[in-house]
Image (tube, rainbow, N blue to C red):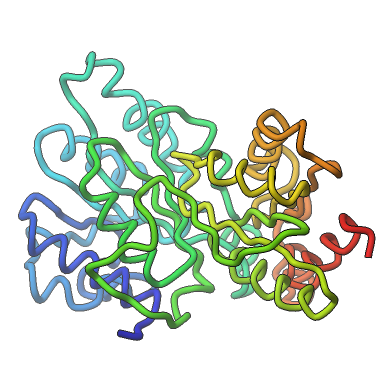
Amino acid sequence: METTYREALRQALDDAMTADSAITLLGEEVGRYGGAYGVTKGLLEKFGKERVIDAPISEAGIVGAAVGAAMTGLRPVAELMYVDFIGLAMDQVANQAAKIRYMFGGQIGVPMVLRAPCGTGRSGGAQHSQSLEAWILHMPGLRLAMPGTVSDAYHLLRAALRLPDPVVFIEHKALYVRKGELDTQRMDAPWGRAIMRRGGRDATIVAYSRMVHRALEAAEALAADGISAEVIDLRTLNPLDMETVSASVARTGRALVASEGHLTGGAAAEIAAQIQEACFDWLEEPILRLAAEDVPVPVSPALEAASVPTAESIARTVRRMVHR
């Protein structure tokens, strides 16, 4: 069936809560208002206020409560209104959720999901438009999912709610209204595995979240010029499926990593480094990164759009790689 990214997430929560009474939701306005972006709309009426909890405006309190609930037998889904606010809860995320299984010798885990929207496209300004996945990727003990499609929005969230570890689940807010096909019985690929969204022979574009769609647009434009670009959707960044990425780059000999996170010290740098280590003997050109400018995200729509990779800039970079 065709549905939106937002509705796929809501359906995943609904189905998971129906199947598992230990799953609870908490966050700012997740109940009566239905979530800042409408993902949890209707769940309070269906599951009640004991399982859908409107929390005070305290990110540290929301995540801290979720960590404690997870340690004592529940499976909470904590929502932050924006991923930008994760800094307010970073002790709970990085020093508690990520480390408790290790600190307790495996006797206690933290099976929780932390949902948060990211990214540009709504002129939210520098404090509401960032892509901070590199912060999470740097921290052992945290799983990280960044679905780019309707199908992955549903299936990766369902999978995250079955894992024994804390999962940071980052949703690009520009994708909430995007439509796509959803088969609730079939995943595109298992949890932790990347997928080839488009085959090609001349270059590999590695992307995730919204950049997958921009990479596919770029590949379509490149095809008109006789350039065949392969597009790999990472789907999760921890686990990071370098086996699929490396196999693609070994075939094409060229790699471009596209990310909406900042360039310096970003996720694209880590992915590019791992490609270099795995594929050095097959590379025909240096690996390139295309990421957000190293500036606070502008509020001006024109400047905001210019600060992150576009389909045009991705296509232009690939043309430079293949010298056409």
